[in-house]
Image (cartoon, rainbow, N blue to C red; front, side, top):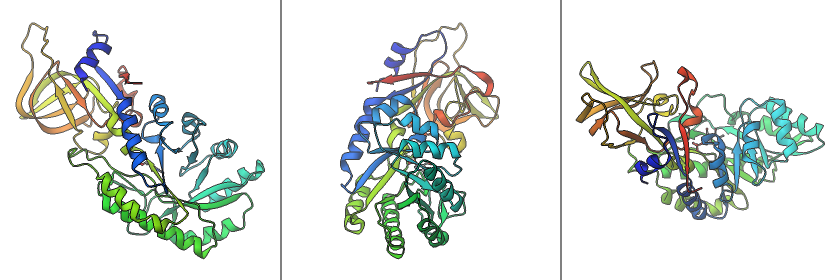
Length: 389
Ligand SMILES: Cc1ncc(COP(=O)(O)O)c(C=O)c1O
């Protein structure tokens, strides 16, 4: 993608460049190839929380099997064209009622209290709500960046409590347990471990279904497939993952396995482009300060990592004083906020980086703009540019 050309065409020119660029064709091609490579017993849902931008959701709607949502507003954004799942750890009555009214495919149950709330809401509407029980496994969850299961967290139902929950559900008239939900981790980069985890989820679900005479319809293994921000040339091995899934087809029998992927679907289509405003040295370290920062792209600050980037040299320099810059040197790229935490890149080598050059942060299409604290310091928001709509 020729970012320089795009910026020249789209940027008004008076303020320093600061933009999110989304390549929607790249998104569609990537999502289509994920979807078409999955075996028939698997469905591809998109986890809206990774990027709820309406342009992104419209691009994905014809491709994915459905959307995973975590709030009433996400359900509204995902629209009514595709089946919805609703799962959130701290649900409000109003959101549950809305999910029931919309007739979504499943609500995830996160606790006994949650089960009773869903039963009550469905009862008020005279409906029976299909639900998945979200399990917090005790062990064998692959190590990854964020662990939501396999370790004590606020998410899901401890697998030791599953028999009690299943007994309680059997006594309720307005919930129907259709399966289990296992979202457990974030940014797993090991395809073989993801296959093993999927196999474990299928096995656990079958064991509970057998013991409690459930008509097991669905196992949702969640998302969690990662982006290798540290070494983008060595990505998650999707082909190995899909081959592993094919081996699980017999195990799965009649059930559907849902993958609700967020990061892996949208990260690659987003680019955050910023202009370098100043370059300087402090305590023998070089710093490049850009227009923008962690209030637009919080991920590298949150994960204390260097976000993958490229420098786009811009030859124009209209000031009548020397242009600050570094050559063949490690540089820390920071933003415009008054906090030392506003760091996008930590001491990475650049051939050349000068005030006025552009820095393009790649893999900025997921957990980027919407997880950032936009209003801190009240700087103008980045321009949003959508390509190939
Ligand atoms: C329940 C649930 N499903 C799916 C996802 C998407 O995960 P990822 O973006 O890692 O694929 C998340 C992310 O936190 C989640 O909480």
